[in-house]
Length: 326
Image (cartoon, rainbow, N blue to C red; front, side, top):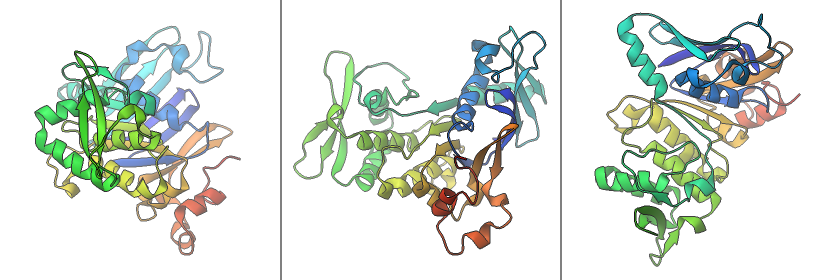
């Protein structure tokens, strides 16, 4: 897994180090680099597909400008360095044994970044082998269809979880609008009526995509997800937290697989409240005169005293902990 990432001249991250654990929730105002962090991981996996102008901080141009760097430190102490030079595409450098390079490169290419969109989630999709959930949530219908056919026991567990999350539905069903296409429906618990995905609420679709991510039989090496709470009722946020922790801490859920490193962003004090007992999982993003920076919530010198009489989300909202609009 990745222990930390140092960004230099990467968009708004001119000189910033992001500490990471198995699970990391980043909170902070707009424009502090939360989304930039997620994009950086995608770009690090395919550096040659991006040019200097696409990744450089504003104001960095010309032949004498410094390199753009994403320097990844792994938990084993090795480092992976990705650089962009003026006028050139990215080029990855690596320190450590050659035997580990291919393994770590594959791990980086296995990172997936999600910004879920309800319209994309509900979309009818053509069937294809080895389909995976796309960044906006599209292809969910064929991902679920494949899970039903190839991993039926896991599909049944997913249906049981669906009933816990949304008790009005008891099963995922499938439709074939045209030859070679697949759509999905949710069956109501009362009356067993199939409700097409296109008629489901935005929150229901977003929740189902989140739930599916948590139960994928072969999940990505890292999941980066923007605002997993978006469009979801606050009463479901504990289930969202549980889904994300299921990815990161499979051993706590009876899963026998490698843990998935998860990075999520949020503006929700309700979601942040759920991490009062896990401050080591929270990173606060702030903007300074030198650019954006990150700090672990657990490192706040007076956190335990501050939390005595108030909820974490409420305290963050007031600005006492930082990471709010100036």
